Length: 245
Image (cartoon, rainbow, N blue to C red; front, top):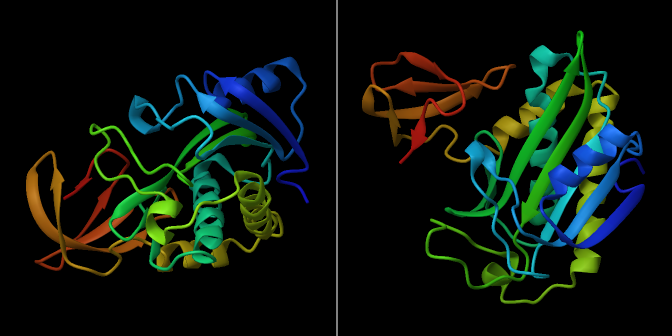
């Protein structure tokens, strides 16, 4: 086992990604090391947002990897395999899990997990990756400012043992990482596309030019979202250039 070969638990942390980065800088980091916290005072989310979680209720951790087999131009494959690993785990407990591009995990129309990936590039290779993951397990009350949260307990009505959930999830992530290592990237990309939230469905989207109706038809190798509009034209969007309505 690579991911989860070493697990460090912190009762409290500012952010597990911050702690993982400190391990990298100090030379103490090892491949597959997991930094887990019971509570984060300033958990990192995408676009500079905070990831908020009730103390001891959810899974909050970061994985340290050295994926030097991945070219920086195709670094989105890391987000894809991480997303799929989480989706694989959840699919063993609930149905209807999807990946909302680029890497939020949805149960139905609600967000159950978020991912923040921070890659360091040296020359023509990714020298290290810190993948921060927040998965809502037992929390049932969330702040009103969080738009559409859900947890495993809210979906199933069951309370979960976090210490059991973690190794199961890490095992799913490890399987996907080994697929990446062995070079089967077409499988990862195909499974990611098949798991996409709203794939092939007509929905409203907002861009800097205004609203339009479109359907997701593909994701490019660099991670761009391909959306076909009603005229049949396929438009390409980078992260933050399109908003799901």
